[in-house]
Length: 497
Image (cartoon, rainbow, N blue to C red; front, side, top):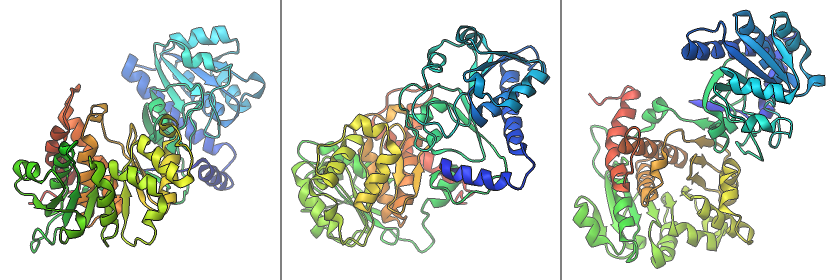
């Protein structure tokens, strides 16, 4: 599992450790790890470090010091290292002295620095560290726009990216690799910051950190969470998921939500809605019931809203009146936004909301009673948006998008590391809703059900699209779920044999 910590937590852990170590030890650990990563990259690209052209973009403070010390280590291995000082008067004195002692070159003129940067085999971005706020300052912005031939390695975080949130306010420098120290930073895992970070590599420096507020599950953790029937299981013990979806306008949403639910671990899928005939024709294993959720019989979780149209309001009210977990999606979210958080007051069973940013805007309008914030603004602040919704509605929120973020009302956040842009296709979200609802019915807590569903859905999209990628349909994504389920389950050592 990748665990990410806020800057405040990192700073506190660094201060505690530095109080017990000789001065400069922590920076030397970071610089050594950074230099080792750079050496591997250069060897992979050029066959050796010796003779490589390396540029260090050094700002003020410790981030620039890390980069300068790493540059000195590469210079001692025969690299031709040039340090470009963006704040000459505030350059890290120890790092600068080490680079000069290793026969590194130092410049401060922007034109010279830009020319060196563009021609370098590798450039180290040590302009701004994890404490930076806002975009790059004017003197650094040309480096973000400059052409380059080599690889750019960010030191702890790409300059211009907010380390805590992944937000980018203005211009930021795009890295090919980011080497982070001690722990991952939330902004490296969440778009738009994640898109600037490239491949992220962690260097341990001995920090003692509190439990992480942001996590990213990997194969092994997801595999361990997958529900598995036992010898005494039957379809009812495994859980029954109810799906209230589809309408005359969107009958396909019902089929897609049921398709996702059938692959989510529950023992049975019970469908209610206007598309019953289409559902049972396509999926004869589904149970169909006339009317709405209130008269459907026993289920262990409800999925409400995909393509629900005018019937979504009544279906939502009936599902929320039940004592089982409820997943609200699509038209159900629109209705919930009109009602506001009070509609969930008094619920003792979990509620899982699965909005995209447009639906998130409508939900937030229901909180504040104002004009909805722009979806683009919410997408640029994904972590903040998910947390605000989870807190306001006292529900777990799966915020869909380029980085899917799952937040629970207790403050835990999980970032989904899987997916592909080919999943931006009609009906994909309906499959995800059915899948997550089925995991709820199978007994997973809302945070786990949402996290596992997003992970499997992303993998299924990759599998369906193939490499290098091709358009896929939502049903193809649903059909790929058993393949990726087996792969993930096997990674946890549970092959079923």
